[in-house]
Length: 298
Image 1 (cartoon, rainbow, N blue to C red):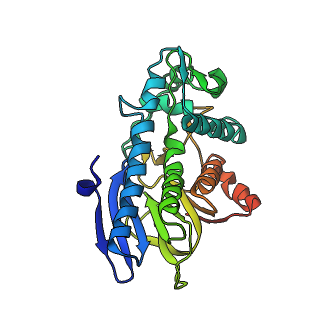
Image 2 (tube, rainbow, N blue to C red):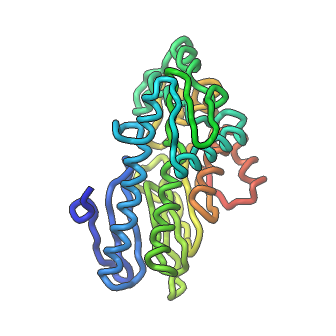
């Protein structure tokens, strides 16, 4: 993909703003006051890394590593180190969530369409798909992965946070110490404080009034990740079904907050806590309180 035609860079009073689209999300970077050539280089690196990860791990692309795995029809697939690290991380999340999080649960989207409509699948439909869900059904001996025929994986639950941290690594490689805020669809990372001491200001969207900020977080270093059902849900008979599914049941998690935002050192760490908390439903805040992390609920 050509970044010159797909990403744009503009100048604000004391920083640069770069924008592009990746992983079905609006993405932006804020770069501290540097020469235009360096700001453009940072934008190109960040956008290229986001697009690389999207190409490699999107379930929608026929040329991706995920498609190759999902199309394996029960045969073994050898993966590279990066993919293996993601698989190990996903397996850890499955263990920590006691099976509620599972990257093999993507097949449930055949029953659920979280488009704001009112379609709720039958239990029989869900049960049929659950036969193809469960990390315990997967043979994983790094670097060899073998899914049972009909099973699939989906990195959608961890991919965006990983992409943010990976892009931040790339910026640090080409411009050590540069203060740059990376925001992929509300998942944010800042590696270095600004020289003038001013924090970056990050708005947390109000989940009932799209486009309005519920609060503004001042971020000098660290990361934020947000999980919620503001845009993806089903509403039926007075009940709102969140898009966050419990892989053990195939049904949306009940009584979870509409939105959870967590602050942590990295976006992956923050995303892990938002995911685990959401899957706890009405006990989400208890988990977050015990973690010691800073968090905001809606």
